Image (cartoon, rainbow, N blue to C red; front, side, top):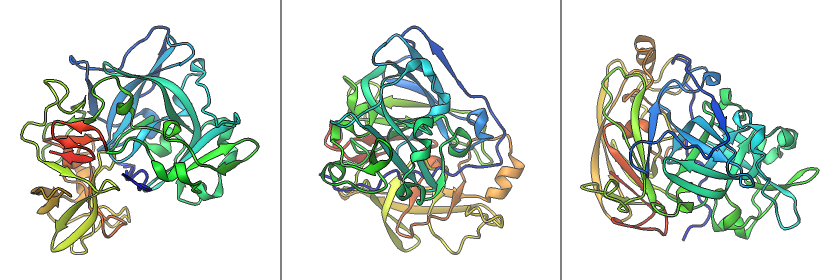
Length: 405
């Protein structure tokens, strides 16, 4: 149903105010497992200061994943601080945190040439090879999953200009702010039929001595990992408690797979907001209609355009009103459902300076570079459960793509 989707809507804006934190990974010779909770379709999520190499992050939700070798399934590595992102698609892991013992095989074209990808985020790009891995997260698994290895040293000097010209390089943990990202957006692949039909510069590449843009089949594209699960494969949901004014540290949440597939993932009273073919809903705010709006756990604030709100003097683009602003907006889905969202925008500079030990802030917001877009970032998730249904998959709330809360 979808033509070219807008790739990777996440605004992964790094914050300098938070303190440094732990991070890293471990390698094991058994099947291992992620940091799950009691139910097989759930896994623990935490908003903390991120991996040590990132130098401190805020409003980033992290999960642990276990990656295993397809050729030696008992050789596995559990990697923490993988960003949970409902605004992108696929599993992407930093080369620097992957153990060489995994020896993940390259994904190749029909001629045996290696495939690579340029992941374009709102504030930069990440380049790396395409490889195959077995994934375990909570009690769910997906075998021979195409993933991107960001910063793969074998391809570091082969970045096409159509990729490198899109922004700042984010090929390390310090520049990316995480050990990787797991994209759980409302589509099944990160590009879809458009990349099957034509080679688009800046997306997928085939590499030998150099890299050229290429077409790629749906099965070789980075998929939303949940679509490869045996069950609970129609979507996911994120649940967080409320965050007080001024923020809090190490906020614990839950990532649940499936919608209406088990007793713990029903929609309940959540309202379904179906999206268009690009994953957009509509937001009406302050008399203006934002037709390219989306719900994105990979963004660390509310991002929208309002010239009446003072911006911070440091040029960061975050809002710094003299006092917290209580605001509201109306979200609407393609199905006609609508509902009011109340939110607060605080002074980002004051939040960071006065609450430097916090890692989760409910009042963080800033300017959106797309004047037609309202980005409902991670603060939107605090105090609620947000569901993301995958396109074409049947759920208890209808067929995706949709968001529900």
